[in-house]
Image 1: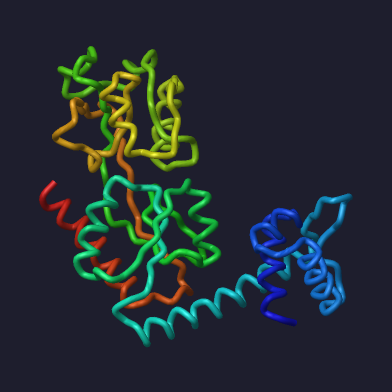
Image 2: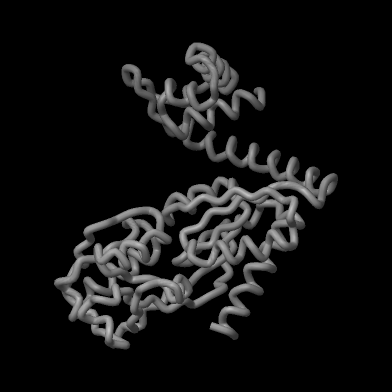
Length: 294
């Protein structure tokens, strides 16, 4: 059994489509098919059910996928550990976030400590982020809500109130607070379902008898304040996202405690490099400072 066979198998298993997998791996479809066939011959069992041109991972394949992912995960951890030992001042950091409003300040503080380190950030839904976590493909996640799991470490670093953002010309702009029941006929802008703040807000609104009417749903939370300023709709935004330069009024929600918890997540078995440890220290220090000087 070869390492290349495992890499090819994992890609095919995740996509369940030979053509897409070949394109992803930058190999020919015939070469990929032969590699998978040799792997099945080595194992003595079929890993996929073939229905016409479609593939479906069968029970043998599902069980083997877990072992194959674990094997490649351990090899990748060893590679990262050696890289960290040989070049501690360099390296790379893989991050995923569902709570992005605080990220620019955190990255700015971290870059001052590690100016030469490269990092890659993905803005994801909660489920997408959890998938990468389970695969061990990210160093840390900043998530709201927190995520629990047998292989996931979860450290809550912040409790961030959610406020109602309205443009200055809105009928509610002169108020300091509002009840949810007063908002049933309003138009909202927000992120798509699957993001923690959106799911929390929808759940609370449903509990008081209405479903928010969204005129815009996106995957970039930072864009929402601009849409509120443009009077496209009102929005539920975390307190940490406020900017004094915005032409926006923020109101507290009466009768309901709308608070998002932000957590730092990492895979229990993933190797934590020195740079990653320092990133965790920066995150904890940032939120501690924010709580002292809101």
